[in-house]
Length: 257
Image 1 (tube, helix red, strand yellow):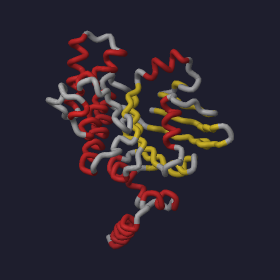
Image 2 (cartoon, helix red, strand yellow):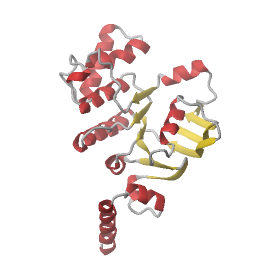
Image 3 (tube, rainbow, N blue to C red):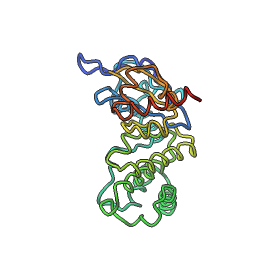
Image 4 (cartoon, helix red, strand yellow):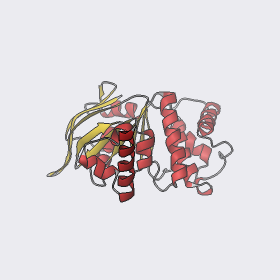
């Protein structure tokens, strides 16, 4: 579990995050959503230590990340896995070598153990037979799955995903969503996903935090969105006329049941 308390972040005289308090739960896919410029990327950077908050607390199962020494933060980061928007694979390394990279850096395993662990992670994301290929030889969806395999190689307690479906077609996006959801439950991780993908929101949004102009505007689960009275949330989720009409039809249908 990750809990943030009264988190604020300012850049000079501009306040980007405004007194945010929330909890991201174990074993669930926790989604951060909001318009571009709302502060959600800054929020995630504060969570992982790429930025230091101006004030407030970031608690990892009760451990205050903000108050930790540099050495303590390095140790805690070994419990984190990260999936970047671009997959961020090493072009000069094979798929297997990419997944082995964090094991080579941070584990005490033998070469045989590291190789087996990396192969097991590739098998888990359904990339059997791709271990000898290079990133440029596989599709964007496969690259994202390699990134997921690399992120879980060290058995992290906390998994951070920045726009994991960026650049993917809808069908492949659903595959990535299902994979993230299943491994979150399987390993009981605290998974936090920064996303614009409304299919992800409605499909795997077990705990959704909606950020609006730097503050937490709404929090709930995907099933609550359809009936939300929060106008800012509904304007964001149902931005197109098609989605607005679909929502109206669903609500009208529910009245007749």
